[in-house]
Length: 137
Image: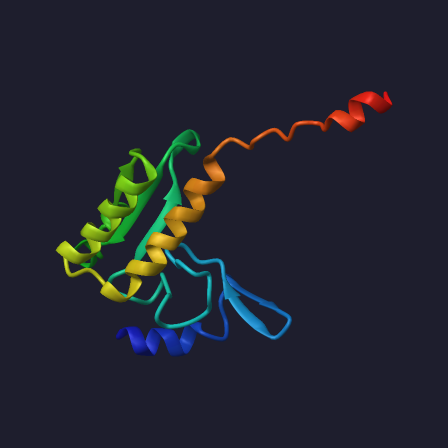
């Protein structure tokens, strides 16, 4: 079945669909923006790109869908862990998308998602108590 026909079936009825305040979101895997749209759909597109947090919250994992393994569900997704620094990781993601001609329209969305995941993995800075609070005690 073509991706367009699959989208017409899935777009209004899906277990991944989340409707809130007149906005439709999607919780499906490999949906970079979590929007319910054909462009970002991780279920119906032949080529999808996903960014996940790495093991033990260290780095990110780039997940690509390989359509030629469609009959082997355990081999459909190719995972590439990236545990380098933030700049190097973002450059590698950009090069992966460009080099393989793999959905160039998802490049910026993938980089933004990876950046957000890496920012969430940084330890929180402890705020210092001011000197005025110490004097009052």
